[in-house]
Length: 95
Image (cartoon, rainbow, N blue to C red; front, side, top):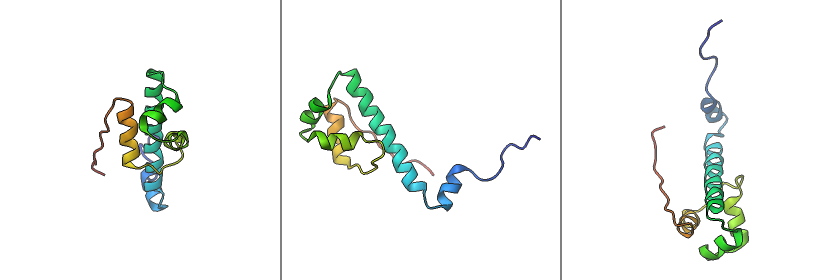
């Protein structure tokens, strides 16, 4: 049997179950947390040092690095990027 596609796509399923937006947010947050963690490792920065550079608490930084916590403000993201000597690049893409 050589059926190329059977059924709907995962995105279609998530959309039907009203889970697409929250799933996308969690996936995006996981990527952001991973990128920040990798940059911290590359620069040999501790959480305490990055929190100081961001002028925030270590608890706030832990929330930023928590890949399952999708709540993230652009201000926090921009602060983390600046503290790491980076910039944020966001754009909307076609659906």
